[in-house]
Image (cartoon, rainbow, N blue to C red; front, side, top):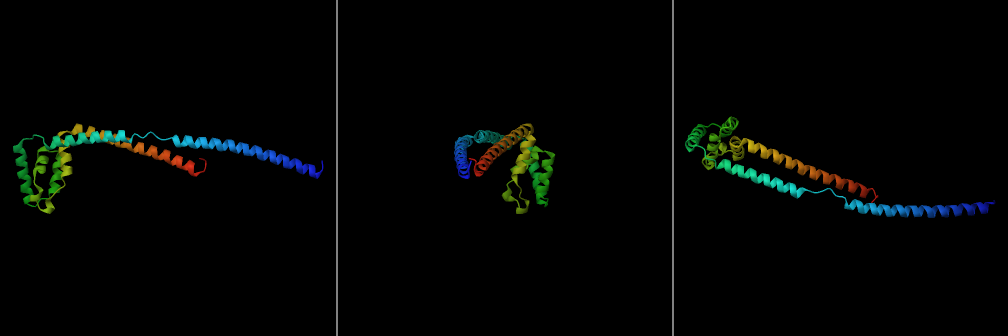
Length: 184
């Protein structure tokens, strides 16, 4: 075979190889488009609304528990006596925060209720206190098991919400990674 014939044969093989490669690449391109559509349709199940509804239900129950605690019928004379005792100590200059911490640690519902009955407008600025820890301690002293149960439920739901968010984020990151790689 002479040079011209060898060259023609090589060119023919190149054209045949090129055509075969183009056909293979077109098939791959079609498959990639199909995969891109499949990737678009993949999404993590988003249960955010269901979980948020559960969280709101638990928070409503916690609010009801708080109302029950604040409206609880404790002996009014004991509450009055505790309030007078607290007022006397505050008048002497005792730190209300330190006294509250002591009453919270003692889990004394009567004294906690007495603290909440004090009008803070009548206290010096330095003697005013945050009601929230006192309210939480009162709830805990009166309804400890219910409070723990609701806290556990809320913790579980918030954990599930984090899992839901994390799963969605991971799926979105993988999809984004595939898209940015040029495969889809």
